[in-house]
Image 1 (cartoon, rainbow, N blue to C red):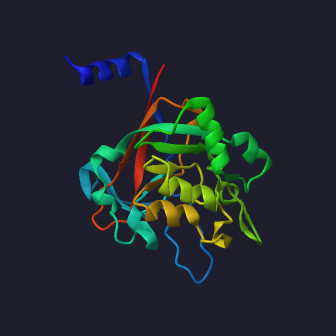
Image 2: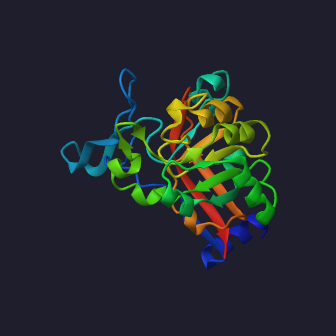
Image 3: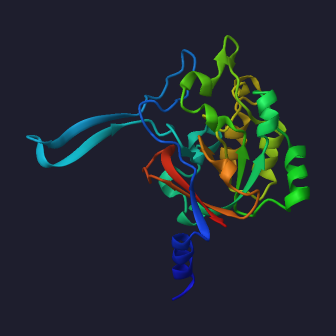
Length: 257
């Protein structure tokens, strides 16, 4: 019956596992908080239209209220000023939404240092053990931060000096943008940059360099601990919002067992 039938059969029999990397989306989903005078996104919300009542006796449905960058979501290049002439989320080629993944696990180091930054040397060390990063694939950074996602204050981890969450160094972000063969970076935190990245030069280097290079970001991922360092395939499915800078997405991984 062909390769696709074999894939479906492998999923049904469990020899290929489908791992959901998506955080549940609700009014409790943590959202980014920018300081004044910057504008902020709204929390996710449902507004009931009808629920088996006089407004609609046989159906239940809602309007949704959300920002593009709420919950597990994809950043398109046009999200950042450096990518302003790049793709919006509706223009991302479908071919790029199905891609192999490399998973680098730095959770033990983040447990000791919430401001941990991934460096080029960390990626090189991973490559020495697992081979080169996948061409046209994702680099997913497992930090263990998804364990905090149920409570916004724990997830943002902010004090008087700002948020303290792990991320990617300036040098590593530029290398991933300019030299690494990946199409983008995926993280478990609220954004692809570290909490303190507002003070880096440039500020928010992962956004600035990676999106500026026409690559993508995936954020607020979960269950990266269920993926192998190599071999998983990621399916990222954002809404094709015309003119959109990003979109909430259902992100799945296929893993051979």
